[in-house]
Length: 131
Image (cartoon, rainbow, N blue to C red; front, side, top):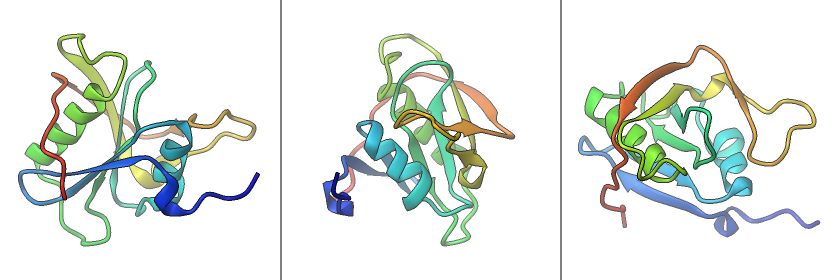
């Protein structure tokens, strides 16, 4: 199977209220690309706990800018929105540094393992897409 070009992955881009970029993978292949190739090690990675959904990156590692509480909340709300829990009220979202996201040997596309995770409860919400 030929390798995909970066432009062929389905990734939606958003901007947090403090100006940080937030990216969401829209399928398993795009989730893998986002979580394992596109990320900076110090970006924050988000996913709804225990349920299928998008992998979400809050891009702050390359700039060295510390992620603010509101941007973390917004990225977590997007992870909840792009999951099977979209209509689930408050949803638990796991997050960690992107460098703590690994692909287990032999794991299916879109499957990763994480370490040193934190969790927060958020309501699923969509924010405006970046241009």
